[in-house]
Structure formats: C-alpha cells, structure tokens
Length: 167
Image 1 (spheres, rainbow, N blue to C red):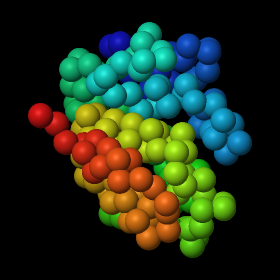
Image 2: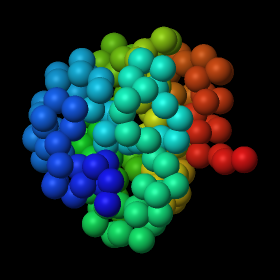
Image 3: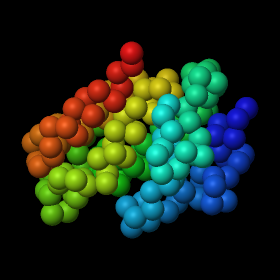
C-alpha cells in the first residue's frame, strides 16, 4: 500500500510529519491559511505546479480506494470537516447550508478566492477515488450557493461543473 493510502488510514504522516487525525483536529483559521494539507486529503490525478512531489491519485491509489471502504470513509471524514469549514452539512443523501450565505462572511463566494481551487480539487478527488455520488452532491451544493449568493466568474463555475468528468 502506498504512503498516501497509509496516511489516509492513520499509518503514515504527511510531508510536515502530521497524521490525518492531527489535521482533522485543526481549527478553521488553520484550514483557511494553510494549503498543503489539501494535497493529502483530496489527491487528484494531475501534479501540482507548486508541489509536484505531493502524492497523486494514480491508478493504484484509485484501485485501493475503490476496494477499501476504510479509505473512502477517511476521505468522507475529511470532506465533512471541509463542509463544516464552508458551513455546509452532509445529511447522508444531500449537502445543505447550515446558515444563510453572504459574501462578507464566506470569502469563497467572492471572485478570485483561493478556495475555488480547493473546491475544484475536492470535487475531482471524490470522483476519482470512488465517491462519485458524494462528488456530485458537493458539486451541486457549491454551484447552487455560488449562483444564488456569490460573485464567482463563469470560468470557475465551469471548472466546478467539469471537475468530475473524465475523458
């Protein structure tokens, strides 16, 4: 099993010697301003331009996730933490807002916010790693909030719409 899967199962650390459980317990301030943890919680199939050394969702990793419920559950827990950060709630069959959104409090609803790339990454990672239904729920919730309450450019919205589509 590769180190990304071991990390997800709490058996390995990330590049900063943190376990997944340590990351799960960090506060919203940390989640907002630290960025590198996203590469570990939500790996995708393309390397980062800034951090090409970070793990990818290669075919081996994808196969592990598809066959291992514990890996999918760990990623789902990471998603629930990020949903809480975005003030959303996963009901088991839907993702709904916890509050009425506004751009002053929810920076991800404004133009050019760094969370837009995170949202794209989460949508894609969930889909790649065997959780397409949850990916679509998250995608739909973010698009609905962005269209109803946000000021987000069409390019970003299209990235979100296409993040879980594969050629």
